[in-house]
Image 1: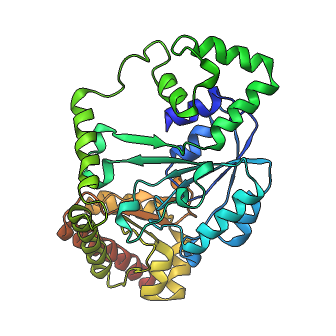
Image 2 (image 1 turned 60 degrees about the horizontal axis):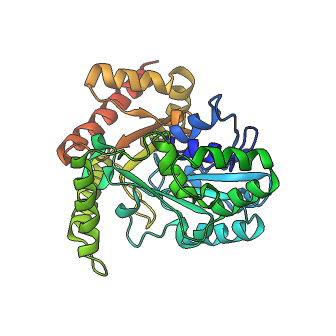
Image 3 (image 1 turned 90 degrees about the vertical axis):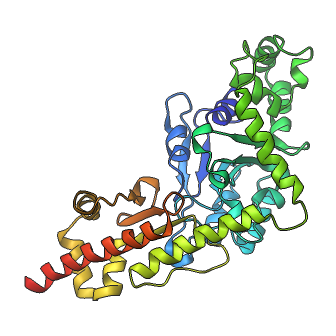
Length: 356
Protein backbone atom coordinates (compact mmCIF):
# COMPACT_ATOMS: atom_id res chain seq x y z
CA UNK A 1 0.00 0.00 0.00
CA UNK A 2 2.82 2.37 0.85
CA UNK A 3 4.60 1.56 -2.42
CA UNK A 4 1.40 2.07 -4.35
CA UNK A 5 0.49 5.47 -2.90
CA UNK A 6 4.09 6.57 -3.34
CA UNK A 7 4.12 5.55 -7.01
CA UNK A 8 0.84 7.28 -7.81
CA UNK A 9 2.48 10.46 -6.54
CA UNK A 10 5.88 10.00 -8.22
CA UNK A 11 4.25 9.18 -11.57
CA UNK A 12 2.05 12.31 -11.30
CA UNK A 13 -1.08 10.18 -11.61
CA UNK A 14 -2.36 11.72 -8.37
CA UNK A 15 -1.31 15.24 -7.46
CA UNK A 16 -1.71 17.23 -4.25
CA UNK A 17 -5.25 18.58 -4.09
CA UNK A 18 -6.78 15.84 -6.24
CA UNK A 19 -10.11 14.45 -5.11
CA UNK A 20 -10.34 10.77 -4.22
CA UNK A 21 -13.34 8.71 -3.12
CA UNK A 22 -13.13 6.08 -0.40
CA UNK A 23 -15.69 3.36 0.20
CA UNK A 24 -16.05 3.41 3.98
CA UNK A 25 -15.97 1.66 6.39
CA UNK A 26 -12.50 0.59 5.26
CA UNK A 27 -9.11 -0.60 6.49
CA UNK A 28 -7.67 2.45 8.26
CA UNK A 29 -4.52 3.13 6.15
CA UNK A 30 -6.73 3.92 3.16
CA UNK A 31 -8.21 6.72 5.25
CA UNK A 32 -4.97 7.91 6.84
CA UNK A 33 -2.28 7.76 4.13
CA UNK A 34 -3.96 10.21 1.69
CA UNK A 35 -4.17 12.83 4.46
CA UNK A 36 -0.41 12.84 5.07
CA UNK A 37 1.47 16.01 4.16
CA UNK A 38 3.40 14.30 1.35
CA UNK A 39 0.15 13.45 -0.47
CA UNK A 40 -2.42 16.12 0.51
CA UNK A 41 -5.29 14.47 -1.31
CA UNK A 42 -8.87 15.60 -0.82
CA UNK A 43 -10.98 12.73 0.49
CA UNK A 44 -14.70 12.24 0.39
CA UNK A 45 -16.51 9.12 1.43
CA UNK A 46 -18.96 7.07 -0.57
CA UNK A 47 -20.13 5.21 2.48
CA UNK A 48 -22.30 2.16 2.96
CA UNK A 49 -24.44 1.32 5.97
CA UNK A 50 -25.71 -1.82 7.64
CA UNK A 51 -29.34 -1.23 6.62
CA UNK A 52 -28.23 -1.68 2.99
CA UNK A 53 -26.21 -4.81 3.83
CA UNK A 54 -23.10 -2.60 3.60
CA UNK A 55 -23.64 -2.07 -0.14
CA UNK A 56 -23.15 1.32 -1.83
CA UNK A 57 -26.34 2.98 -3.02
CA UNK A 58 -26.76 4.08 -6.64
CA UNK A 59 -26.46 7.74 -5.65
CA UNK A 60 -22.94 7.10 -4.37
CA UNK A 61 -21.91 5.59 -7.70
CA UNK A 62 -23.32 8.66 -9.44
CA UNK A 63 -20.85 10.81 -7.47
CA UNK A 64 -17.96 8.79 -8.90
CA UNK A 65 -18.94 9.77 -12.45
CA UNK A 66 -17.74 13.34 -11.84
CA UNK A 67 -14.42 13.74 -13.75
CA UNK A 68 -13.00 15.68 -10.80
CA UNK A 69 -12.93 12.37 -8.89
CA UNK A 70 -9.51 10.97 -9.78
CA UNK A 71 -9.50 7.75 -7.78
CA UNK A 72 -11.74 5.29 -5.93
CA UNK A 73 -10.34 3.17 -3.09
CA UNK A 74 -12.08 -0.08 -2.16
CA UNK A 75 -11.51 -3.12 0.04
CA UNK A 76 -13.63 -5.89 -1.47
CA UNK A 77 -14.88 -7.79 0.54
CA UNK A 78 -14.75 -4.97 3.01
CA UNK A 79 -12.77 -4.70 6.20
CA UNK A 80 -14.37 -4.38 8.75
CA UNK A 81 -17.85 -5.16 7.41
CA UNK A 82 -16.86 -8.32 5.48
CA UNK A 83 -19.18 -7.80 2.49
CA UNK A 84 -18.33 -8.31 -1.18
CA UNK A 85 -19.66 -6.03 -3.90
CA UNK A 86 -22.97 -7.33 -5.25
CA UNK A 87 -23.53 -7.93 -8.96
CA UNK A 88 -25.59 -4.73 -9.04
CA UNK A 89 -22.66 -2.78 -7.59
CA UNK A 90 -20.30 -4.27 -10.18
CA UNK A 91 -22.69 -3.21 -12.94
CA UNK A 92 -22.67 0.32 -11.53
CA UNK A 93 -18.85 0.30 -11.63
CA UNK A 94 -19.08 -0.29 -15.38
CA UNK A 95 -21.25 2.82 -15.65
CA UNK A 96 -18.78 4.84 -13.60
CA UNK A 97 -15.84 3.94 -15.85
CA UNK A 98 -17.87 4.71 -18.98
CA UNK A 99 -18.67 8.18 -17.61
CA UNK A 100 -15.26 8.86 -16.00
CA UNK A 101 -12.79 6.91 -18.19
CA UNK A 102 -9.62 8.13 -16.42
CA UNK A 103 -10.74 7.23 -12.90
CA UNK A 104 -8.30 4.88 -11.19
CA UNK A 105 -9.63 2.15 -8.93
CA UNK A 106 -7.63 0.45 -6.22
CA UNK A 107 -9.33 -2.76 -5.12
CA UNK A 108 -7.87 -4.66 -2.18
CA UNK A 109 -9.28 -8.17 -2.59
CA UNK A 110 -7.49 -9.96 0.24
CA UNK A 111 -10.72 -11.52 1.60
CA UNK A 112 -12.13 -12.56 -1.77
CA UNK A 113 -11.28 -16.24 -1.27
CA UNK A 114 -13.76 -16.41 1.62
CA UNK A 115 -16.77 -15.56 -0.58
CA UNK A 116 -18.38 -18.18 -2.80
CA UNK A 117 -18.20 -17.23 -6.50
CA UNK A 118 -16.35 -14.02 -5.67
CA UNK A 119 -16.04 -11.50 -8.50
CA UNK A 120 -13.46 -8.72 -8.31
CA UNK A 121 -13.96 -5.18 -9.60
CA UNK A 122 -11.07 -5.91 -11.96
CA UNK A 123 -13.33 -8.35 -13.83
CA UNK A 124 -15.64 -5.52 -14.91
CA UNK A 125 -13.13 -2.64 -15.16
CA UNK A 126 -9.72 -4.18 -15.90
CA UNK A 127 -8.22 -1.14 -17.64
CA UNK A 128 -8.85 1.17 -14.67
CA UNK A 129 -8.13 -1.19 -11.79
CA UNK A 130 -5.08 -1.76 -9.65
CA UNK A 131 -5.39 -5.14 -7.98
CA UNK A 132 -4.02 -5.54 -4.48
CA UNK A 133 -3.84 -8.98 -2.90
CA UNK A 134 -2.14 -10.57 0.09
CA UNK A 135 -1.58 -14.20 1.01
CA UNK A 136 -1.65 -13.26 4.67
CA UNK A 137 -5.32 -13.93 5.45
CA UNK A 138 -5.87 -17.18 3.58
CA UNK A 139 -2.59 -18.75 4.68
CA UNK A 140 -2.21 -17.15 8.11
CA UNK A 141 1.07 -15.51 7.06
CA UNK A 142 0.40 -11.98 8.29
CA UNK A 143 3.85 -11.45 9.80
CA UNK A 144 5.58 -12.10 6.46
CA UNK A 145 3.79 -9.23 4.67
CA UNK A 146 3.47 -11.19 1.43
CA UNK A 147 1.38 -9.27 -1.07
CA UNK A 148 1.22 -8.28 -4.70
CA UNK A 149 0.02 -5.54 -7.03
CA UNK A 150 -1.21 -6.24 -10.57
CA UNK A 151 -2.46 -4.28 -13.57
CA UNK A 152 -3.82 -5.20 -16.97
CA UNK A 153 -1.35 -4.83 -19.85
CA UNK A 154 -3.69 -2.25 -21.38
CA UNK A 155 -4.25 0.16 -18.52
CA UNK A 156 -5.14 3.77 -17.84
CA UNK A 157 -2.11 4.26 -15.57
CA UNK A 158 0.37 3.97 -18.45
CA UNK A 159 -1.89 6.21 -20.55
CA UNK A 160 -1.93 8.93 -17.89
CA UNK A 161 1.87 8.77 -17.56
CA UNK A 162 2.24 9.14 -21.34
CA UNK A 163 -0.17 12.06 -21.32
CA UNK A 164 1.66 13.84 -18.50
CA UNK A 165 4.99 13.30 -20.30
CA UNK A 166 3.67 14.70 -23.58
CA UNK A 167 2.03 17.75 -22.00
CA UNK A 168 4.69 18.79 -19.48
CA UNK A 169 8.37 19.15 -20.41
CA UNK A 170 9.43 19.35 -16.76
CA UNK A 171 7.75 16.02 -15.95
CA UNK A 172 9.31 14.46 -19.06
CA UNK A 173 12.76 15.60 -17.95
CA UNK A 174 12.09 14.35 -14.41
CA UNK A 175 11.12 10.88 -15.67
CA UNK A 176 14.09 10.67 -18.05
CA UNK A 177 16.57 11.57 -15.33
CA UNK A 178 15.02 9.33 -12.67
CA UNK A 179 14.56 6.12 -14.63
CA UNK A 180 17.62 6.37 -16.88
CA UNK A 181 19.46 4.98 -13.86
CA UNK A 182 17.73 1.62 -14.29
CA UNK A 183 16.46 1.27 -17.89
CA UNK A 184 17.66 2.25 -21.35
CA UNK A 185 14.33 3.82 -22.42
CA UNK A 186 12.92 5.54 -19.29
CA UNK A 187 9.88 7.05 -20.99
CA UNK A 188 8.71 3.58 -22.06
CA UNK A 189 8.82 2.22 -18.53
CA UNK A 190 5.45 0.83 -17.45
CA UNK A 191 3.69 1.95 -14.26
CA UNK A 192 4.00 -1.49 -12.67
CA UNK A 193 7.76 -1.56 -13.37
CA UNK A 194 8.16 1.94 -11.97
CA UNK A 195 6.41 0.77 -8.81
CA UNK A 196 9.00 -1.97 -8.36
CA UNK A 197 11.92 0.39 -9.03
CA UNK A 198 10.64 3.11 -6.72
CA UNK A 199 9.87 0.61 -3.97
CA UNK A 200 13.64 0.03 -3.90
CA UNK A 201 14.37 3.79 -4.10
CA UNK A 202 15.86 3.29 -7.60
CA UNK A 203 19.37 2.81 -6.21
CA UNK A 204 18.53 -0.68 -4.91
CA UNK A 205 16.50 -1.73 -7.96
CA UNK A 206 18.89 -4.65 -8.52
CA UNK A 207 18.02 -6.13 -5.12
CA UNK A 208 14.92 -8.07 -4.13
CA UNK A 209 12.47 -6.63 -1.63
CA UNK A 210 11.77 -10.07 -0.19
CA UNK A 211 14.04 -12.55 1.55
CA UNK A 212 14.59 -15.96 -0.05
CA UNK A 213 12.28 -17.72 2.45
CA UNK A 214 9.55 -15.20 1.67
CA UNK A 215 9.98 -15.75 -2.07
CA UNK A 216 9.70 -19.51 -1.56
CA UNK A 217 6.50 -19.02 0.45
CA UNK A 218 5.03 -16.78 -2.27
CA UNK A 219 5.83 -19.41 -4.90
CA UNK A 220 4.30 -22.26 -2.91
CA UNK A 221 1.13 -20.28 -2.17
CA UNK A 222 0.75 -19.34 -5.85
CA UNK A 223 1.36 -22.88 -7.07
CA UNK A 224 -1.38 -24.14 -4.75
CA UNK A 225 -3.95 -22.14 -6.73
CA UNK A 226 -2.57 -23.30 -10.08
CA UNK A 227 -2.77 -26.96 -9.07
CA UNK A 228 -6.52 -26.66 -8.45
CA UNK A 229 -7.33 -24.36 -11.36
CA UNK A 230 -10.81 -25.03 -12.69
CA UNK A 231 -11.91 -26.99 -9.63
CA UNK A 232 -12.59 -26.25 -6.00
CA UNK A 233 -9.46 -25.78 -3.92
CA UNK A 234 -9.84 -28.01 -0.82
CA UNK A 235 -7.72 -25.67 1.29
CA UNK A 236 -9.89 -22.66 0.43
CA UNK A 237 -13.07 -24.65 1.07
CA UNK A 238 -11.73 -25.78 4.45
CA UNK A 239 -10.76 -22.19 5.33
CA UNK A 240 -14.24 -20.93 4.50
CA UNK A 241 -15.77 -23.65 6.65
CA UNK A 242 -13.53 -22.71 9.59
CA UNK A 243 -14.61 -19.06 9.60
CA UNK A 244 -18.25 -20.03 8.98
CA UNK A 245 -18.26 -22.22 12.11
CA UNK A 246 -16.67 -19.44 14.15
CA UNK A 247 -19.09 -16.84 12.79
CA UNK A 248 -22.19 -18.90 13.61
CA UNK A 249 -20.80 -19.93 16.99
CA UNK A 250 -20.26 -16.31 17.95
CA UNK A 251 -23.75 -15.16 17.02
CA UNK A 252 -25.50 -18.16 18.59
CA UNK A 253 -23.62 -17.58 21.83
CA UNK A 254 -25.34 -14.18 22.05
CA UNK A 255 -28.71 -15.74 21.29
CA UNK A 256 -28.82 -14.07 17.88
CA UNK A 257 -28.79 -15.11 14.24
CA UNK A 258 -25.99 -13.95 11.94
CA UNK A 259 -26.25 -12.69 8.37
CA UNK A 260 -26.07 -15.40 5.71
CA UNK A 261 -26.22 -13.31 2.54
CA UNK A 262 -24.09 -14.45 -0.40
CA UNK A 263 -21.84 -11.38 -0.13
CA UNK A 264 -20.85 -12.04 3.50
CA UNK A 265 -17.25 -13.29 3.77
CA UNK A 266 -17.74 -13.95 7.52
CA UNK A 267 -14.08 -13.14 8.13
CA UNK A 268 -15.15 -10.29 10.40
CA UNK A 269 -18.43 -9.46 12.04
CA UNK A 270 -19.48 -5.91 12.85
CA UNK A 271 -22.47 -4.97 14.96
CA UNK A 272 -23.87 -1.93 16.72
CA UNK A 273 -23.97 -2.45 20.47
CA UNK A 274 -26.93 -0.07 20.86
CA UNK A 275 -28.93 -1.94 18.22
CA UNK A 276 -28.05 -5.21 19.93
CA UNK A 277 -29.32 -3.75 23.21
CA UNK A 278 -32.64 -2.90 21.57
CA UNK A 279 -33.03 -6.33 19.97
CA UNK A 280 -32.45 -8.10 23.27
CA UNK A 281 -34.19 -5.79 25.75
CA UNK A 282 -36.31 -3.23 23.89
CA UNK A 283 -36.28 0.40 22.82
CA UNK A 284 -36.47 1.89 26.31
CA UNK A 285 -33.33 0.11 27.39
CA UNK A 286 -31.52 1.15 24.23
CA UNK A 287 -32.36 4.80 24.90
CA UNK A 288 -31.15 4.49 28.49
CA UNK A 289 -27.96 2.69 27.44
CA UNK A 290 -27.14 5.07 24.58
CA UNK A 291 -27.84 8.22 26.59
CA UNK A 292 -25.96 7.19 29.71
CA UNK A 293 -23.02 5.08 28.54
CA UNK A 294 -20.44 5.50 25.82
CA UNK A 295 -19.88 2.48 23.60
CA UNK A 296 -16.17 2.97 24.34
CA UNK A 297 -17.00 2.59 28.02
CA UNK A 298 -18.67 -0.72 27.20
CA UNK A 299 -15.62 -1.87 25.20
CA UNK A 300 -13.31 -0.83 28.03
CA UNK A 301 -15.30 -2.68 30.66
CA UNK A 302 -15.49 -5.72 28.38
CA UNK A 303 -11.70 -5.78 28.22
CA UNK A 304 -11.04 -4.92 31.85
CA UNK A 305 -13.64 -7.18 33.43
CA UNK A 306 -13.72 -10.14 31.06
CA UNK A 307 -10.44 -9.90 29.14
CA UNK A 308 -12.33 -9.68 25.84
CA UNK A 309 -10.79 -7.11 23.48
CA UNK A 310 -12.74 -5.93 20.42
CA UNK A 311 -11.93 -3.25 17.87
CA UNK A 312 -13.81 0.02 17.69
CA UNK A 313 -15.52 0.20 14.30
CA UNK A 314 -15.70 4.00 14.29
CA UNK A 315 -11.93 4.15 13.78
CA UNK A 316 -12.51 2.41 10.43
CA UNK A 317 -15.32 4.71 9.35
CA UNK A 318 -18.47 3.20 10.83
CA UNK A 319 -20.89 5.21 12.93
CA UNK A 320 -20.18 5.29 16.65
CA UNK A 321 -21.35 2.22 18.51
CA UNK A 322 -20.06 -0.46 16.15
CA UNK A 323 -17.80 -3.23 17.44
CA UNK A 324 -15.61 -5.33 15.12
CA UNK A 325 -14.80 -8.96 15.84
CA UNK A 326 -12.17 -10.82 13.81
CA UNK A 327 -13.02 -14.48 13.17
CA UNK A 328 -9.48 -15.24 12.02
CA UNK A 329 -7.41 -16.06 15.06
CA UNK A 330 -9.30 -17.98 17.76
CA UNK A 331 -10.84 -21.47 17.93
CA UNK A 332 -14.64 -21.64 17.77
CA UNK A 333 -15.00 -22.28 21.50
CA UNK A 334 -13.31 -18.95 22.24
CA UNK A 335 -15.84 -17.13 20.07
CA UNK A 336 -18.57 -18.79 22.10
CA UNK A 337 -16.96 -17.29 25.19
CA UNK A 338 -16.60 -13.90 23.51
CA UNK A 339 -20.27 -13.75 22.56
CA UNK A 340 -21.32 -14.97 25.99
CA UNK A 341 -19.24 -12.29 27.73
CA UNK A 342 -20.71 -9.53 25.54
CA UNK A 343 -24.22 -10.78 26.33
CA UNK A 344 -23.45 -11.02 30.04
CA UNK A 345 -22.07 -7.51 30.24
CA UNK A 346 -25.05 -6.14 28.34
CA UNK A 347 -27.30 -7.98 30.82
CA UNK A 348 -25.50 -6.21 33.67
CA UNK A 349 -26.31 -2.86 32.08
CA UNK A 350 -29.91 -4.00 31.73
CA UNK A 351 -30.01 -4.81 35.45
CA UNK A 352 -28.87 -1.23 36.16
CA UNK A 353 -31.67 0.02 33.93
CA UNK A 354 -34.27 -2.02 35.81
CA UNK A 355 -33.02 -0.78 39.15
CA UNK A 356 -32.99 2.93 38.29
